[in-house]
Length: 216
Image (cartoon, rainbow, N blue to C red; front, top):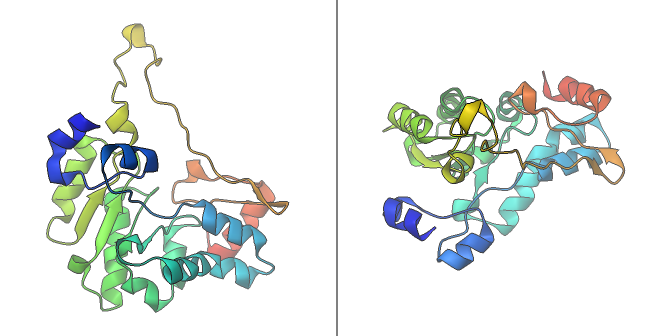
């Protein structure tokens, strides 16, 4: 971590790993996780409560946190649905963390949504975070330069960029997935739809209901 701090200097703004932040004199930064809307959605008693669950999370979050912690994670049940039903006050938040959709596509979608609500995207922040490597970060930065403020949650490839380095075509050095998602809340199945169909998780029957409520 010290070498990373020295190499990136002030461009390294913090880490979402709280222990690393404490040990390395960095700011602990990040967003709320998908588990919060997943749990509230699982506990919803009606389709209406289910549809409002993502915004209830943000409403309760903003009662406690402010400033740079007002970064919305929109894709637990699909970014398009989130933006379509979002209360206007969400547009006043600092920014969004587009996660599972292709970053340029997701960023443009959110920028268009801000403009429709009369907000200047140049004053907003997009935090890109899904499977980034140096080439992806540079491409996204070039595309959005001057359009919006940007930050990059550079994780797996930063700490394990050894794909293809194993001899004889072995995948022994490839990173493994350590992503965990809640499966049940108070005995009810929890679902994540995601912008990436490969990341959908949860009971199939319940997921079908979520698709009906939030939109496929």
